[in-house]
Length: 517
Ligand code: UN1
Image (tube, rainbow, N blue to C red; front, side, top):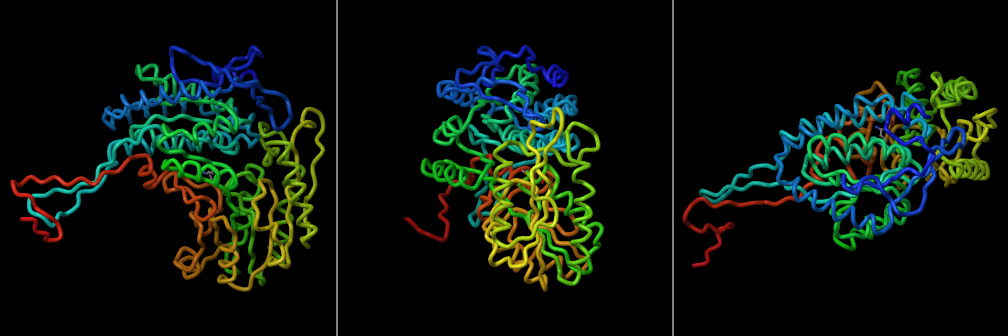
């Protein structure tokens, strides 16, 4: 921990670490309560963080507004140039930042590093975009009239991020908001403040070198109240929220009631469907990764599997074998090479895991493997360990727990008689994030991505539900919140649009043939 801390310029004195930054003059500060960051693998305290008080948030918002007012006048390719430098600075620290993500969040090292890589990737994407984004020119029905759609910077973008992707999801928002001319104010999850502080320090070094205001990328560590301060404040033009459906509902109502805009990334209850003609070893590998990666704590984690009945018995045996090869031998310290499954992020998550397994049993589910907490030895004894779990569900219609997202490595497996039935099962939950279909049949692939197909925001054929690249829009439908972030045209949400008609004749032309003479 100490060496990662020093490499990322985090204080190692043991004194509380300041978790608020919005001005180079005021420096790192924070007059709110202390927040504790813990290593989920050991329970050890990594640091105490000074959070933002209401007054700090107010000052940060004022500073962000001012920063935006200067930044919006800077040509977008020049903004892109600053982001290119940030990309360089982040890439230089990619291993250390990845290690800190693993240390504080609990995901294994290659996934921690992958997350920092995802930030770098979206920065590359946004740098290119900074030279090309814009509206269209529309053909006018009137002579000597020119119609164009103009994208201007929006203002201040509030980003409330979750513990499971403490770095990349902020990156998706920051990169797009930055090149489109906005200031961001970031409220990270209360349990992952150190990743946020380290990331902000890297970005700030570039802002400072370019003599740009710190509040272009302000940080306000804090809990629900700090988040609420951003949610309810009119000075936040767009509020991007990642977290639970319950909290997301509250956020969207509050933001809508002040006519602000929100971008929601909420729960997932993702299904993988396996048809008889699939490449079964590949399907097995993809499902194992999607169910166990980040210990089942990705929004995109596969939680439900629908197997065609003709291959189900064989496939279930292989799946159970695969789990046994992971658990217990490959469960452990996320920083050790060879570990595939790290701890859950918190003690509360362990309780929710236990509760879900209990309910699943009561509802008739059969635990095929796992189902219990894990007692570790030595340093790891204080961590949040559970067994990767597969539950066989014979009667999906009378198994309500399967409709809930439990952020843990619990996989519900059941059988279907046809692709149509699998699609119907896929769609019968509230959430609509990610779906995977394993088949070699082109017709089945087209069916799942078509109008009568899966209703998810992400649909993959012969690829896992999790681990999306940054190039396409990321997000989900229905109770997942309809938000889209990262690639594609997600940038369009970070601008205000004006449809502009310019008449360069000396006659007033009225559309629709209207006369007013
Ligand atoms: C999340 O779980 O909140 O597709 C984001 C994935 C990652 C992003 C997940 N690229 O699994």
